[in-house]
Image: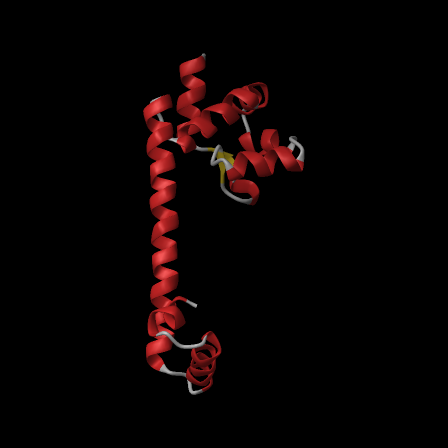
Length: 130
């Protein structure tokens, strides 16, 4: 639409040329689409970085750190049981599947199968609380 307005032609003429370029797999058109996607991705990243910087300025920590601390505090009772148990795997296996998945997604537990255990970062938080 903008191209047609700049050139002073009808928009259907521009659309027909674009259709022909797509059909012929024009490399310049393909590069233009790639550039458009890259600009959109960079714009999203810059907005995300601004949001994270604003949160860091307000809270003094990143959003990921805050989320991690909230999850540690929310599941504190379950994590204390895991931390004090002899076999972390059996203590973790005793939790419901949704709790196990939430802990894994928030990087509080790590491993798979018999290697499931608390992360070093989670251990540090639990040691500070004791």
